[in-house]
Structure formats: C-alpha cells, structure tokens
Length: 290
Image (cartoon, rainbow, N blue to C red):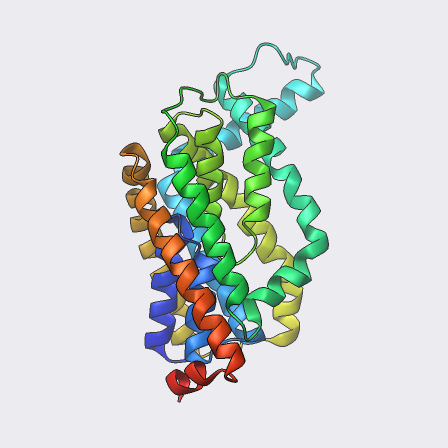
C-alpha cells in the first residue's frame, strides 16, 4: 500500500463514516478494486475507524464531557441511594438512553466473524444489496415530518429502535449514521438532537469493535510503513471532522433524500458489477489492479 492509497482510504473513511452512505461499503469497494483486500486491509480499516473516533471526540467534546461528568454523578447517586428515576436531568436521561441503545450490539457479537468476512472477501455483491437497503431507508426517512423529541421526552423504545438500526449497520454497505439518524427521525426525534445522539452512540460501538480486534491485530501484525499508517489515520481525522459538519447541515435541511438516491443507484451498479465480475472470474478487478 502506498502513501497515496492510504490518504485516499483515510479520505473515504473520514467522509463516508459520517455521511449516510456507508464507510465500510465504500472502503470495501476501494480495497476490492485496488487489490488491498484481505486480513491486512481489515486491520488497516480498524486504524481508520480509530481516526474517525477521534474526529467525533473533537467535534462533540462538550457534550461528551457533560455526559462523562453525569456518569460519575449517577454513580454517586446510586451509591448514596439518591437516584430518582422520575426526576432526572436531560443529560442523565440521554446517558441512560445511550446505554439502552447499545444493548442490540451485544447480539451482533455472535456474528462478528461472519460480518468481518464480508468486508475482507473477494466479492462485492453483498455490499450492493446493503447499499440498496441504505438508500431505501434514507428515502423513507426524508419523507417524515420534523420531530420534536429530545433528551427530555425520548423513550426507551426510541433508544432500542436506534440501537437495532446501529446493530444492523455492522454489515458493509449499510450506513451506521444513515440508519441511526433515519431511525431517530422516524421515531420523531428532533433533527439536530438525533445527529449528536447518533454520533455519540457510535463512540462505544466503534471503540468496542477496535478492542475486539486488538488481539488479532497483535497476532497478525500491521506490516505497513509508518508514513502509510500515519497518513491514513490523520486523513481520517481531518476529513471526519469536515464530514460531521456536512451531515449536520444535511439533516437540518432535510437533504437525506439525495444520499438516498446516491446509495440506491450505487447499490444497483455494485450488484451488476459484482455479478458480472463473479461470473467472469473477476476480470474487472484484475484489469484495474493490473
């Protein structure tokens, strides 16, 4: 892998991680057509995800800090038996609802190896169908009226629905941000609130995925040169920040439908290319890699 390829993958990861178009799906396509698929590509993808994790922490540091303070205050109240479920600040409700949204992810642990296999195999047909699902979801959500729910009146059911959307989005080609934001919009959440909720919810999800793969990373080793690694990581951070700002503008202006059209068209194209390449012994991949 060259420095330029690392930069392009960081750019792809940074922009598509937060835009509702699926970073894992685009990264899988890039790796397929450049010959950078396989275990080393999967490990490099983990590094890029760490870069986008840093981007979220930079943009939402105030909210994250507030939630961290609230977490320790909650522990203090639980120990001192002062916890009152019916009388909670919005920050505390948001913290507890985020925990509820994380529950569906535990069920996906059983399918971890299967899902990672889709990302590193030599086939892109599954990604195509997942892009289609992302497009349909975005178009459906774009037709929904503006909601008014926020941390004060969001329900546990809303949190579970968003959490389930995030769990499904572990498949390459299904956008995590697109799925969780769409689910929140369909549940009647305020558009600005659902963006921050979605991105902060992604922090423990991405962090957990990284932790789960650390053992494999240490065993396999990341044999890429340091300049390549640093280029990929920092480009993911920079373009991740720019992407978050863009998504905030897109959701406020109810422009999700344009990304829906894009992923719908991309899905149809990827399915067609994937089936053709499979039937012809990956001739297109060989031409591009060669």
